[in-house]
Amino acid sequence: MPSPIVIVAGHFLEWRAYLPLANRLRANPFNRRVWIAPIEPYHWWQSSGANFRPVIDVMAACIESVAEQTGESVTVVGHSAGGRLTRKFLGEDDYCGRRYAGHRFVNTVVCLGTPHHSWAPASSVSTRWANEHYPGTFFAPKIRYVSVNSRYIKGNSQGTLAERTAYALYESLLAAPGDVWGDGIVPEPCMTLDGAEVIQLAGVYHLPMPLTTWYDAPQILPQWAENI
Image (cartoon, rainbow, N blue to C red; front, top):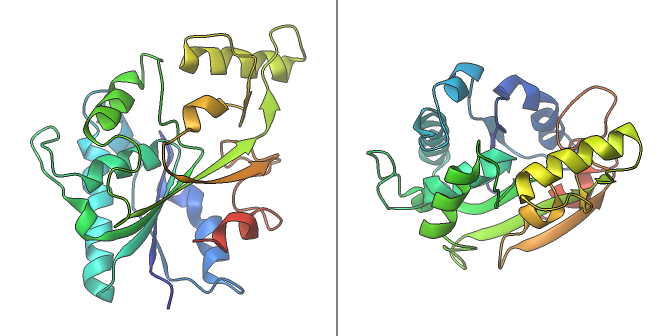
């Protein structure tokens, strides 16, 4: 039987945004057992670039509870910053006063559009800490790492409004010209995690928003969920 799944929200998003994804993973043809870490917006507001313990503590409690309930290790699906924070949870180093050692409870980490590298002030401290303490696929082969990336739009400083917006967002994360492909918010170079399996998608926007195609879309979900 496939392992239970715990979904971890992206930056400033709440757990309810992931109900459609959870429900589709529970249904045919996937038939997975799925939980969503009950992260609320205030957990993000309580966090900062240097200390995301309010969010990681919620995630940790959920993952450990699911592992205890099922007697199995867990597949974690982390969207955006949720994937990066999962990497911190796996480790044993002190993080703001707590040692999680989450590798004891996890068999697979699936990162959906996760920025593993960033030079933006709001996220550079967090990404740098994760990469310094647990570079790349640090716990492989015990833990499988899967990076699910999307080419949604290429940044263009002279293009359409959408292309110019993408360019500015990509530039802020790269601290370099934003004329690269990305998912509308995160540029492709920032999604790279050395050693991870890569599932490359096309046309998937970074955020689960109305009128956009996201990772839970019926035509997209099988392209990555069948492989976890």
